[in-house]
Length: 84
Image (cartoon, rainbow, N blue to C red):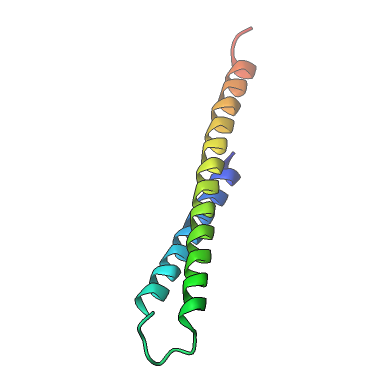
């Protein structure tokens, strides 16, 4: 189904953005003008990386599900339109 593939692409983009945000936090860890403590920064980096990876894995699962539904849908259309 086309909706599954679209949703999987969006989830993959969001997962990538969460990982990018964690990378930005990692690069800014030595900034002296920040109000966030190092412990909180590490906690949020870990949270963003885990959530980003989980979303990307779920996006792959949805993508595969959409591909199998497309293949099954095409087979049933061919059977309905074919000679009996």
